[in-house]
Image 1: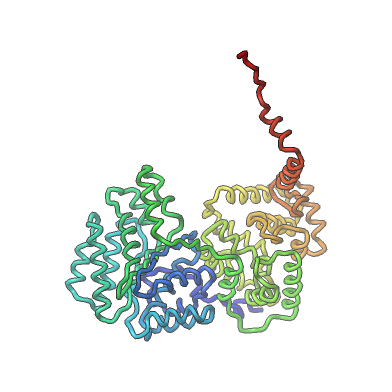
Image 2: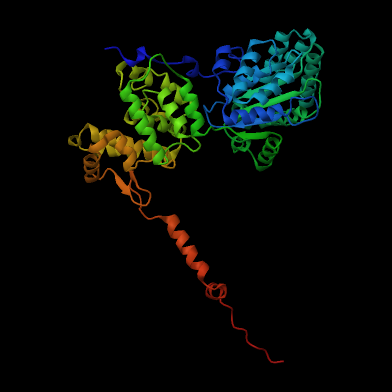
Length: 515
């Protein structure tokens, strides 16, 4: 019997990482892009500065590794390309399906022009001045701007150059681009944190001030205004810990020149992106559809669906992402945030040929089979366990491993699978109703659940928390601290204020003095 890999495929375009310099003209990446709520927010911010008048045009995207910042940078560059360029036409068409008025603003901004001159800089541990000038030189050469201007740019590609002269050189590029029909200059600095780390080790260069000057210059009116988009994983000050207080204060001041957007997608958006990667050329078996109907109903009743995701839409996503079981699908994005690099790790799993990776599982599964939560556990413990950076998550992961090692082999394979499932749900933390509750676990283990739980409890590997009705691998108190605090506060509110003050700070007796 052939495997599910004959009917289910993962689009390879979603499984590759993006490099702004290398992929600047990759039309397939623009076609595959899904504008999420955070992406639309960032694009609206950029659209506010598309005119020639003075306007804030310096934007910083702050988000963890693999959250899609580079993909947005690529898409924004395509939107600002020349109107007759296939990149612009494709990007505007994609955005129109999500936000037609916003797409119209980008179309109008580049109409009857050569669009924006795009300068893409990928962060490496090096001088920001050198890498920015080299990228600017490449853009100028490709655009066919005057050769003397290119020579000046390449000459300036050295640390220690006067910052005001570098900004003046960028202004001349803007002017030259406007004279040949261009309408703006887009500078994108991806992985800015690597430049900041380099700067923290070479503070004598003071290149942090170049960012300040560029942000201030982007505000100015111009026939070809500067749009400045930087992408980094943390706020500026996190890269300045090794510096003295005076320099740290300066870095904070520079960050204040940028409009910041926290770039981390909610779970519902991650599910949409994941579903777009699946390709299937046959209808689902009736038994699978019935299972999805029951699962959707149960998850909705338990409040386990992501906030804002309606049951009908959830059912459609579950259908698109078969053979991932609905619980597996809901666990996966949050698990990738907790233990690895968000969407980058998510799509690495989807395209992985490693043991328990999705493509490897597709070859082994047949129609009606599922990828279940314990398969995720096996994949991450084998292939991603070394990437866990958060100490609390790493500690909890070790608790699950220890519990599995303590479990007697006589407990059986199903008990092991249950323990792995509870452990994963514990790792991601309770997401509303998405937790290791009796109702959700019964979706996977059915009538056998009570007996399996009894085995794990007798082995002291799981514990039931009554106040929030979930099973835990690591032992914790059932004491509901929040409720106790609320009750104590309510009691205090009933006491007269004067009596409370007299008890906490009694007045000292005052002895009358003889006149």
